[in-house]
Image (cartoon, rainbow, N blue to C red):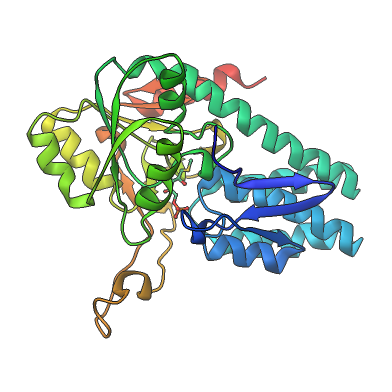
Length: 334
Ligand code: MRU
C-alpha cells in the first residue's frame, strides 16, 4: 500500500493523519490526551468506524500514562470519547474493551497492550474480509462504492476495499465507480486517492449519477462499509447508502456490506434504535447557500432486507441476516 497510515503509534506517542487536509496535504496531528483525541474524532481528522475505535484506545493509553489515574481516565475520558461520535459502535466497543482490561489490570502498560491488540486484530480482520470477499469480484466487472471504507478508515486493507485490494494484487482486472459522497467528499478526497495510489482503475461520479449507471446495466456489484450492524442485520452507514441499496434492489444489483465483527452490535435490536449523528449545516451550505436551513444527518439506515450479504472476517452472512449473523458470530466466538 502506498498511502500513509491513518494512525501511527511509535514510542508511546499517537499521531493521526489529518484526513481533513487530504488529498492535498499529508500532515499528522500529535494526540497528547483526551481533549485532542475528542477534537480529532469529532472534526473527522480521524474517521471511519474502526479507525476511531483504535484512535480512542490509544488516546486512553496516552492519557492514562500522563495522569496516572487510570480509573478516572477510563471513566471520564472514555465517556468523552464515546460522545464525540454517537453512531459508530466500534468507538464504544473499543472504549469498553479498554475499560475491561483496565478493571483487570489497572496499569498504563496493560492499556497499551490492549490498544495494540485492538489495532492488530483490526489489521487481521481486514485481511479476513478481503479473503472472504474477493470471489465476489469477477474479472472485468464494475463495482460501486460509497464514502471511504478503505485503508484510511481502518488499517491496511480497509473493509469494503479489502476484496478490491486482494483481487487487484492477484491480477484480477476490474473497475470501481466511486461516489464523491457529499457533503464531505470522503469518496472524492479519500477513496479515489487511495484506490488510485494502489493502481486500481476507477471513475469518480456524483452521488446522483448512481441511478443512471445502474439503469444502464453498468454496475455489477456494490460494496460499502458500515458504522454499525444491528442485531436484525439493519446496516447503518454514510448518508446516501440507503439510496444505493434501494436502487440496487430495483435494478437487481448485488449489494454487499463489509465490516469486522466489532461493528456488529447485538445489543441494538434494529436500525431504529441507533442514534444518527447530525452535523453542522455549514458542511452542506459550503459556499452555495449562505442562509438556508439545513438537515445534515451523517448516516442512514439500510434495512436488512435490502442487503445481499455482510462480509466479515468470519465469513459472509446472507439472508435471512438476523439468523446468519447470529450463527456466524456465535460459531467462531471461543
Ligand atoms: O463520517 P465518516 O467519514 O466517519 O463515515 C465513514 C463511513 O461511513 C464508513 O463507511 C464506515 O465508517 C465504515 S469504515 C470501514
